[in-house]
Length: 322
Image (cartoon, rainbow, N blue to C red; front, side, top):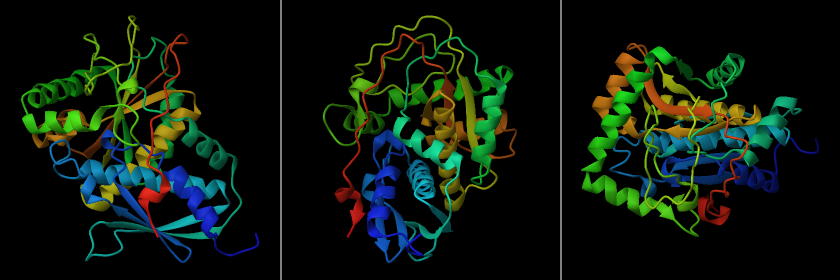
């Protein structure tokens, strides 16, 4: 290693990987700043979805996923990372400062970094192939190392997750502000943010646990057999800003691990934006032991399913403060 700190080209490459992280409605609500050899991560409040995400939990969660993507990219490039979370009490939007030190990348670093390039949110129904329990354990172990917990939702508790999911859809159907926000940020064609119409399937009436319906769905999903998707809940013992940021890191770890294992995945958060429904999940799925931060669906897409188009991302020039 010729330098004790990464150069600007390396940091730009890592941030370019980081912004491929998933975010609520693909708002990409982050800003980055390079100060010397450190990378600063800020939330972008102008991209806050007030109706969808009133507590800004999803915004911070999204930034946490991007933070983990950054750390994975830097690890692959030969740098370990030390993170200061919420480093400035005067500026709540300053979420993290990342410092680097040289290290040799591991095989896992390369595998997760490759997964960044392949991971996509696949909202279609999955096949009837069961996910091996060992895969679920691997996903949970990798995510737990990031400071949150992954709870697998067994068949006996699926109804307790389905009820609030259906209730959220019913409440949002008559929420004018929510519907306007949804229309603004989905059904997109040719933009660098928002949920593309081409990646949004028409909601399937037989979904055991319903998922969020986006505007103007254009993705044809002809899967008719039972969906053997597994459901996971990313949760934390506390519910402060730091906990939500760490949950975003754990979410990223779970999604990248699932991708590395060959699984498809999608993030579901709709009922978590409604406090009473989030409380219901905390009580009836997590037994009041943790706070739900995200729900994740994992499974196998049918072999006949066509590849999805890439979800767009804003260019680095729009998210990096010079």
